[in-house]
Image 1 (cartoon, helix red, strand yellow):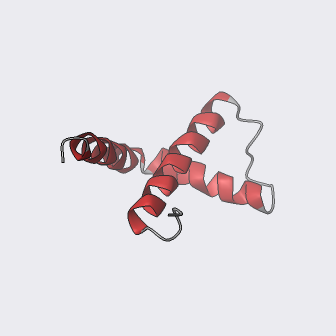
Image 2 (cartoon, rainbow, N blue to C red):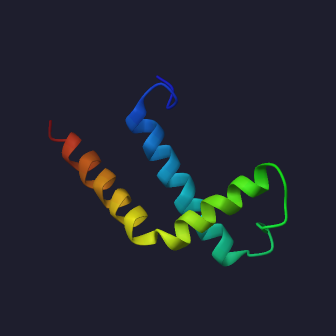
Length: 74
């Protein structure tokens, strides 16, 4: 099943991409700039979400990790 048809998978994909893009922005700041148009502007918005809401994004990552860990036992 595709991640677009399963809501939980879509949320996981979104959180994972926010974390990844924020990590790339911190290590390679010239790749993602605010003046770009198109897909780069979406990446810039994801970095803003990742930087400003980092405690909530981290909590979502922990929640998904615990949920995935517990799914092995059920």
